[in-house]
Length: 320
Image (tube, rainbow, N blue to C red; front, top):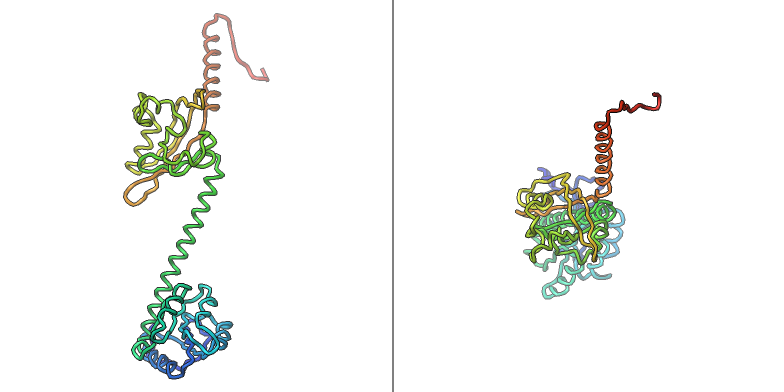
């Protein structure tokens, strides 16, 4: 905010200069208006004041100008100053002036969106520049927080859209390896609803048979110490190091049937205070691995045939 220049503030009139902050004072008592104007003559910040004595005049001014702050009496001849709060629509802060004994009405104004209220007195009129500066600063902080919250909400919505529509299985896991969120691809693979997945441990929820070796579940089965996926998850949660291309062969239980699967996973750390959560991504590569293994077997079979005969054999292309 620009500092006060050496010359006094010129006149309390509207200006189109965007560099000079504008404060609108709406007060029907002329003596109160003069006291407020006088207090700004010694303010350390430069403001351009304009005044209105009624709601009608205030509305006319606000149709053409957006002030930095509105200071308004609660009781005006043509209505309540609280109507200016509705008009503001979060574009600028409003401070309510109230007579002694009307604090309850002012508190109601706070509930409807006023940034502050001031009980009229000689002392409060003299302190108006300081009150205005505090209101402007508080308003700025509130707007920054609201913008941050809106940005956070937008980011969360974007991430949820990505999670929900990604073909990759994704789940968010907390520091205890328990599922906080699972996307539709993950729930479709596990054949378990999202609500039923929440709180379960990672390998338990997608039906790893090794988790059934011990009543304590994932991490305590006979093969769990060698589980590459579990080791990667625990390391990410402990050190914050992500892992990629983790191949996990296991048997999954689906109802009363067993399915041999090969999963390809990755872990990405998400720091929360002094601990880590993680995003676990999984691909079902069972079909691909089966094809690769069949090709290897076929190549090995062909090589054995070549090596086991005394006949002269050669492989030629289409051109001979």
